Image (cartoon, rainbow, N blue to C red; front, side):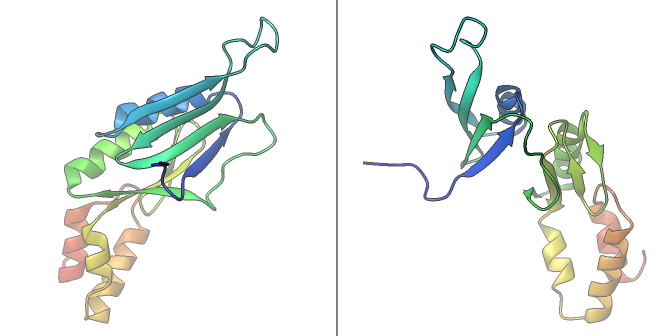
Amino acid sequence: MNTRPRITTSLWFDDNAEAAMNHYVSIFKNSRVLSVKRYEGAGPDVVSHVLVCTFELDGSEFVAFNGGPMFKFNEAISLTVNCDSQAEVDEMWARLCEGGTPSQCGWLKDKFGVSWQVTPRVLVELLDQADPVKSRRVMSAMLQMGKLDIAALRAASDGGG
């Protein structure tokens, strides 16, 4: 019986798929390495070179492979981390942004070039509320932020930010 998920996210790296996998697994709780496949029989200089890594981040399966420099990550695809608290936003932002580049509205690019959105779960509630004036204030506040600040978003909703 095949227990693999129906849809798996695949990430194309130049030559650092294993390092990226280990980095991501170290950040997210309930995560693990599932497999690492290495090149075999292609000569002594590539025997230990990783071809494909499979790993799980908080229950979602990913495949990372070393495909060479032909393709690069860009912001057209991003991974969203939904956070329950400001402490979690702060931790995820710091860990994922380490060696990477912060952007705005909760977006960042990690040291491997993968785009992430570090988002507090309450943001959807604040943006979807019935009062359009409050929603616009939240959106306006969010557009001014790099890392998202839950207290500032709530204050904007209440008219104090």
